[in-house]
Image (cartoon, rainbow, N blue to C red; front, side, top):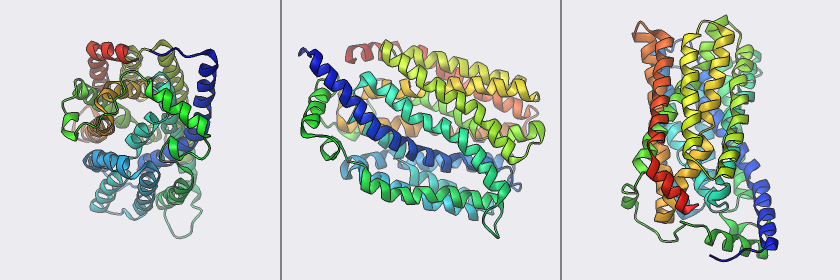
Length: 435
């Protein structure tokens, strides 16, 4: 291993900071738009009164079936054609479809547009994760991923009040509030697609804001990273990577809990106190504001310690306990809000360490395996985005346990995810070797 001088270390630290300033805020903003268009249906549900709990749960979750089917192909296409064009294409098509949700006045149309929206957005999130591996080593990746992924917590923090205001104020004439919300919140994705084409480089070599010496330093830095392979393995080999199915299973269980509760929280909070849409939006902001702070703190601590497994399993366990408490206090607004805040902070804070861990496991198999593997873990895991909301709705409508039973089901899935991570000692050893 080559020795790094103090001057080189200082130059690399400055370079990482510069790249972070140039990329993370921009990607963060794109993910805010993506996540808002994915979950604003949870606020529309308050006015789309013709949707039964089962129909809503199915439609909210069917997004992830389209996402699952097209995510791996989308990530492989991104690797071939470049991040700039492909992310712009993703944003443009999902923006058009998100606006099309304004016309979802029947169950078949509701299902159809949600499914197509999943297809359109497939590849954005795993594509960005792959993109970040071009710029950052495993040492700082959890923090960078967490800073990017706090967008989903921030989206709830300000997106809820904005969605509530649009639905109540109805700034456009002749349309219901929920229709106006979909139109106005889908438009930024369409517009930002053109900004992506103008601003986002495909990789370090295309970055006009890096000097030639900085590009050379970054290339040397990435080449030194332990466990990174430049070989291109076949797509089939991705399915045989040791530990990949454990990662898929873990993410499936975690996502079941995360989306299972997040796509129902506005409706549940409204029923607690018969609040109006604006009040619901502000109350929903509380758990996600807290989870954004905890997410970054947990990822930073994980990077400093060079440890991933416990930084995933322990917060997941806390998230499971929070969901169980939420089920117990469901009819008491203040304790229930505290419980769901604890649950959200626990569940969302796993994301940075989890994806940093996954990329370390996949990187030794080559660039192709890294692209396909990230997409595979995310796509299989995101089936939980269908299972969680759907089963929650089915338990609510078709059993005597109601919302309480649904919340306990979600708590159990996250608990299983925590236990699975606790059991994954071999992956933790591999991470230590590649760190």
